[in-house]
Length: 548
Ligand code: TXA
Ligand code: MG
Figure 1 (cartoon, rainbow, N blue to C red):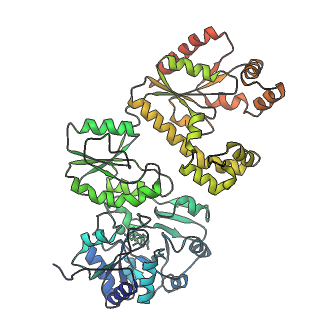
Figure 2 (figure 1 turned 45 degrees about the horizontal axis):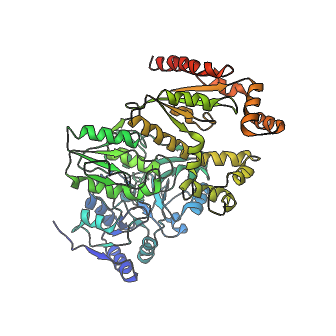
């Protein structure tokens, strides 16, 4: 039954004032925030707060977030504000962070659904804060969707869900974050992550090391489970069509979806630019590996799935780091925790080769290529990860300054080397930025070669263990040779003086570092002619022992 003719207001002074008037009249109103649109009511008007639950068919035990426009307002709703909460507010407010604190007695149980805590946040969207200011009172607001449906990231989504049941929506444009706020319980010296969101765990850890992830963030909870954040247990963000996440690379995704198309009407939810090789209806949700863009596209994509008119939708696995963690959390719920692991299914045998300079790793790699292996040159991959215009290079510039760029805007590896090699912390920072990007590219290559049916893939990786690439391998090999032999080889190959050769050799880790970690130590001291036979033997032994 239509109670209202739902109006869409512009985000100007008149729109803000009209929305505030509706709020003070006891109505609920659609408002923009940077995360998702909210369905707001005056926290001091109990009947209005109950109206939120009615309007969106929200379960009565799921508490609402209180939205404020200035820090001091926190004292009117929270009983205790720990110093840690103040620090977090200074750092992340206004912004997509909700802090759960002990509630003030004056706050109605209607807002907190009977909990003795209250979730509070100061939104970054100027229109949201202007509406709170104009109303002169904090606003309780859940996301402005019908319960169970993906959250709205534009005014049109709110209209689609609530047309006729609310008087107005203020149209503040498309939400720039796209997933809801991060919800944390704040105690004196610790944080508990109740819902991942726009502020990442890594960001929180810059303020407080002690962050635990609550049960239910990544696993399924029973509807009757007693949990801290009731929102986590409900089936959420769900299109009507079943969604299944396929965990693996693009090649494996394409072949799985193509196979399933023989049996069902299939749709796909993929990253931008990935639709071309699929012959089924497709919806995209941001760029691969870019959590922020995946977050922005996620809910719109989920809302479109039902219109594909298919029986099942297969979705690409999102990036799991940074804001991607929130995307992963929402998509898992949309899929009812249904994930198929493609990694184990079609992957070629992956052999990681590492070794010190002059040991002849490249030669072993060439022999494997002769035998039909696909070779990944991880040094080259590392260079590609920081190529001009890449997100990783931007992050490096943010961390180490513009001095690490050449005039042409490329990564100046020597300048970067000078900064990090004398400073352990900076080196760790460099690795934390580059290693995940490099591993992603290596995974893409593994996926590519597996999809094309190569018998095996060898990673030529001088820093196989240091970068964590060994985790992608079925077996690892440490190629080594006697010190003198290695020295002679690099003297010949690289035209170095004896002093330079020794300096380079001594800068590397001791043999034990590699030997301890590798499945096999391959000594390359002999005749070149014998090398091929030795390599074959090793391969037989390693591939033969696979799966046993
Ligand atoms: O970004 C956002 O947070 C958006 C915009 C509108 O601000 N709001 C939003 O609200 O997502 P909602 O109601 O859809 O989600 C609030 C989540 C729920 O999972 C709820 O259980 C949890 O926050 N929550 C609220 N108050 C809580 C409390 N006192 N203790 C534990 N969890 C709480
Ligand atoms: Mg919600």
